[in-house]
Image 1 (cartoon, helix red, strand yellow):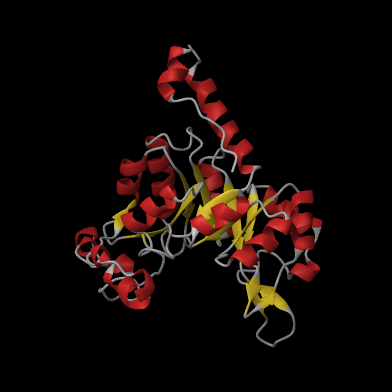
Image 2 (cartoon, rainbow, N blue to C red):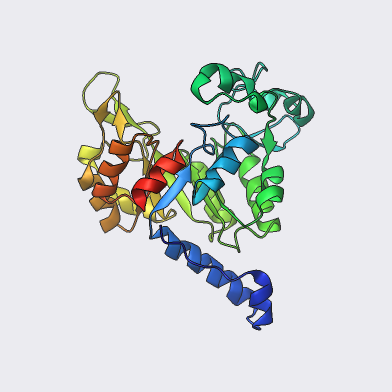
Length: 307
């Protein structure tokens, strides 16, 4: 894995480099780094520890992940909380929608015990009682020592989320530090973020599945046609606001994209970050296709193959 050294801010100021130039350099460095292969820790090292907890994030860092992936929802009191599902049942001992609970109520939940039951081969008594985390807590712990790959949900669900997120990232200096990518299945969400801060690299997620009538493939939100019908113009429309596209690779065991999809995306100036790839043979196949990054629950596996 090639990682580019980044000057600490103290060194930047010691060298007399203007802060604006330093910001531009950090952003430019991030875009340069994105041209290399990126290991994106899906909800942290979520194959080994309960997703979106300190256990999963710390493991991901230790395993050489380039980015920590965070899914964000909002609490009833408008706090940004790292959790994948809209609801609490799968990954906590709570019930109902995340957005219907205050942060205090969410913090009282056990977000770790479920993992020990679901994955006994990786169970650890320490995971019991793990807490849900806010975006602020994650940033306070890691600062810009890691990069964050943040997923936003649909704006109709959380109309305040986009602005709250961008304001937080700006206030913490993470955009200027070149430390964040934002992804979404919602084109509307990404376009809102692009209007709020055009410096943030964006990735358009897509989900290809079999059409209801069984005839061919469709993309979940209609952001592109089926891969077999996709045109350069479809990729260029995404490239107007995003640096990359994030596709699923298979659906019900069948490939939905191929090496040609990757090549066509590249020809239209887009990176390709595939999700969610956990088996070594699949990782190697996608490396052979030339993808620019992968989401994985097992960052150590991908790190050993991508080196």
